[in-house]
Length: 404
Image (cartoon, rainbow, N blue to C red; front, side):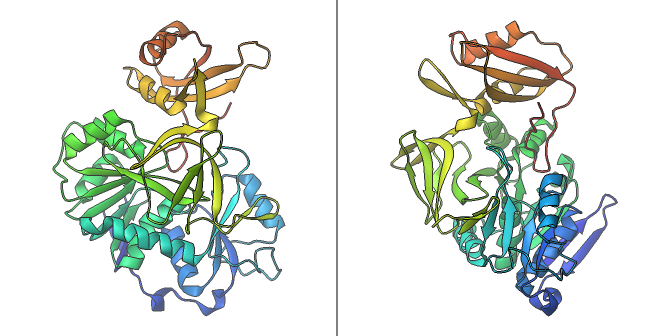
């Protein structure tokens, strides 16, 4: 199998992937961090770590707090051999991923080779009907989603990999052949929906994760490209939890994943994909179970995902998701992106209010936005705080960044 790197000029650099090509006995047991130099260097270092029995910590180097923390713990870059012992030397793991920190300070999730390989085995059975022969990757390899679907799934199945540092929507359409799987995000799905011409991609499959896709975008994509979208729901700590195809109403748990809810209807997960331990100033054992902050409704044939507790608010006893509000607002002409948070009004008796930031050239009023939400969600009174900006920042996997 080959790993191919496409550059902007159209030239392709090919690497033949085999153990003989990537094993380095000097790296056996070595602990080092892999930063965000490029997708190419990330992929090559991950392959070296896999075949050389190394321990790699993956992180976004723009997070200076984490970089400084690792340096203080004597963890050097993966390519550099540290002479000093680290707290990770005696830990049994293959990769450590940092969480996004969306519910607090980023946490290190330690994954063993067994965690990764068991999850790939489950994905292989799920994806078998699609007879995948090539995987195109638009996401970075420093996050669990990118490494699982974009690197280790094809690696352990002998499937060719193709990626580019920065894909444009047209790049993807030109590269997709029969039996291609595209590992991407809602950002690319929505961008492809905006392209005027369509294309018959009936023998391909799109995998989307990092955020839920609204039903309108999914249906538009299905019709425009005559292909399937499989959405993945999971987290860094838990690994994959569930999936759904196209406009399925319910998420289906992955094979081997057991779900339950606590008294607040927040999801509890037990599975062989869960990190055996987490690092947050000290190591915490998970015992194969994680309590999430995701509200769900469990049903016989699957589950409904309502949203994260930090992204949920109540009106008249009914829960609403900020993602749902963002999707409603992004359907309005003149709004490119919407970012919504629920905030606590400390100096008000009203409790919570909805903090809305819009990427728009038009100066929408608070009254206009409130009317849209009341028409689509509830006619009840609720407080909103509105900001209009030229650009809402996104990270490398397309997640919107809250910087207030």
